[in-house]
Structure formats: C-alpha cells, structure tokens
Image (cartoon, rainbow, N blue to C red; front, top):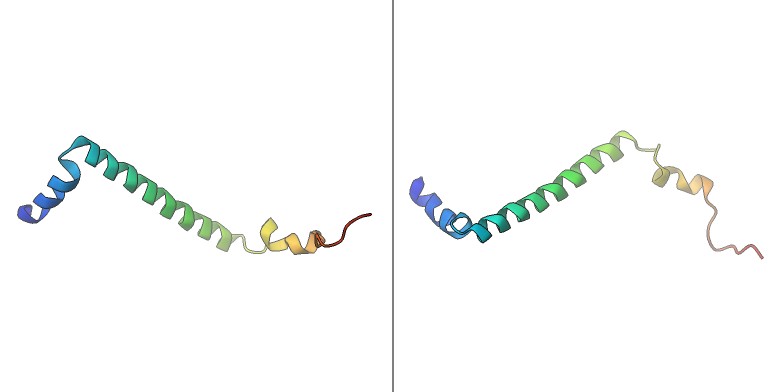
Length: 67
C-alpha cells in the first residue's frame, strides 16, 4: 500500500505550492458540490413557495409598454 501512495505523495504533497494548490482546488470543488446539494434540497422542500415558482402569477409580461 505504501508503494502505491508514494507517487501521489511525490506529485501532490512533497512541494508546498503543489500541496496548497491541491488544498485550494479541493476546497473550491467541495464548496461547489455543497452549494448545489443544499440548494437542491432547499428547492425540493420549498417547491411552490418560492418567488421563482409563483412569479408568473404576479408579474405581467414585459411586452406591454405603458404609454
């Protein structure tokens, strides 16, 4: 097992700048996945109660000009 992890260590974690790049890229990817997941859960739990769901009932189309 140690021989399999050695190339990964040498590529990503041996040099400080490479490790920082991996940490920042991982944090960015995690944030994107977390945001999409929580937004999806929120939208599913509140379907029909959000402005994007009921907007058509209250907003007239923008084609008519008040002149």
